[in-house]
Image (cartoon, rainbow, N blue to C red; front, side, top):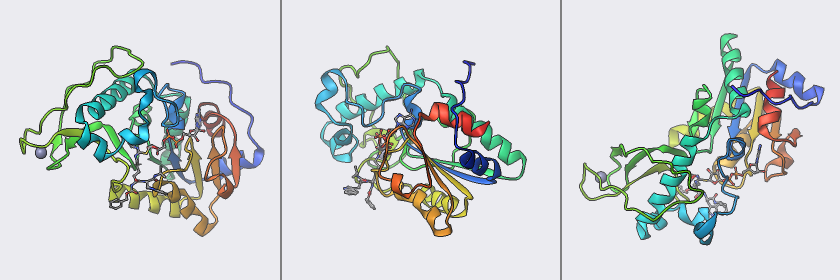
Amino acid sequence: MPDEPSAMPLPHEVLDLARAARHVAVFSGAGISAESGVPTFREVQRGLWEQYSAQDLATPEAFENDPALVHTWYRWRAALIQQVSPNPGHRALAQWQRRLAAGGGSLSISTQNVDDLHERAGAEVLAHLHGRITAHHCHECGAPAQITAPHDDGADEPGEPEDPPVCQVCQEGLIRPSVVWFGEPLPMADFENTAEAMRSADLILVVGTSGLVQPAASLPLLGMERGTPLIEINPEPTELSDAMHHRLRGPAGEVLPALVQ
Ligand code: BV8
Ligand code: ZN
């Protein structure tokens, strides 16, 4: 287990809020996985894939138009995720969740990320608002599907496009990753559970998200109904910064361990 980085000094008021909190609601985005080596959507696609924007590939139209291209892109991302590890930020949240649960409190994690790094750090995840890259289903009939694990040849960009498998159930549809594409609705249960967690929390952390993608990004703001303290952890300002009570301008892998001390 690598050493945890030296904890970053935080304002006393923030440390007091963290110590007093009994029901924490966490809303995470791609930034929490950045220090594990998972590229965020903002990072430019590399090599020949520079001609595509993630936003254009993460749509049902792109998959229907060129299933092999989109399938290969997700297989490359899934392989990369399999190869990396949770970072101290993921681990700090899992540790805090265990500590609060042992004392009758709770820490809920609602993530926009499709990776499984929160889970691999030992945390329970309340909601994957944009689905999970590790699950698959038929694009036509919705039947869940298992596909062979992606082999990671360590390439820093996807290889030659290969066709997605055909559904064994309806024999027609193509198998796709169970992520939420742009233009697709979010899973209702995940959305409702996150809304409930944000309304009932006594502290809300918004970690590593630009807050650009709706309707997920509006969920943390439900905490404002009861004046719940909102803390942003992000090296950069975001769409949500103005609504935050505290803005911790540092990487999640350093700020979260300091907060959970
Ligand atoms: C829907 C899964 C309707 C796929 C994703 C115009 C205005 C407003 C909204 C819209 C609009 N036009 C269209 C829309 C709706 C659209 C939308 O919001 N578009 C945006 C771009 C304007 N939303 C949708 O389409 C949603 N569906 O609305 O459906 C509907 C309703 C009923 C019936 C039918 C239809 C679906 C949206 C979900 C899209 N899927 N992911 C996949 O992963 O492949 S979203 C994807 O992009 C990620 O999940 C993430 O949420 C989002 C952004 O990705 P990133 O940029 O990588 O991450 P993030 O934004 O979080 O930024 C990284 C942050 O980390 C930065 O702030 C950076 O500073 C910070 N950071 C970096 N390093 C660190 C760090 N922080 C901490 N520590 C560090 N070390
Ligand atoms: Zn099918």
